[in-house]
Image (tube, rainbow, N blue to C red; front, side, top):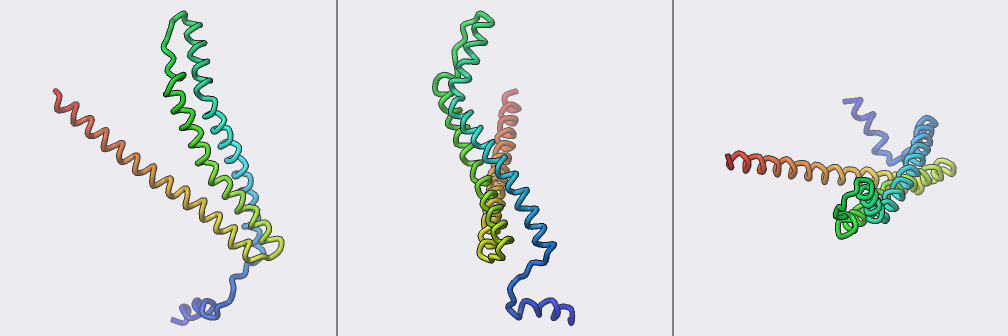
Length: 166
């Protein structure tokens, strides 16, 4: 029981959280890695958006080259609505994936400001940005799991329909 009182004594006094030098060093290293990952994420998101914007033209050119090489006249699937759909799809995915990169960069910048000037508000803002990154990936994981469950259910329904056709 005495141990519980000792643990709770710091909470009851209302003292502010203080970071020791190793905690600050961990945050500083985390901010550096976050900045590195943020820059990579932003660059790849931009590449995905650019690919999305030029996807239809690129696939049309590729199928034209394939048709010329084989001497066949193939219908160009990527020049019409499929190409437009794929272009919009890649552009949207790229823009969605830009969000965590920007938030990680904001986290890194805020943590660096907080550690250099002992600014509690900057620390709070940085941790808030980090929370939004984890929330984004959590929601993305939930959405992915739901799609996987629907995919398995659709596969089971399809297999049972095939089994009933025999």
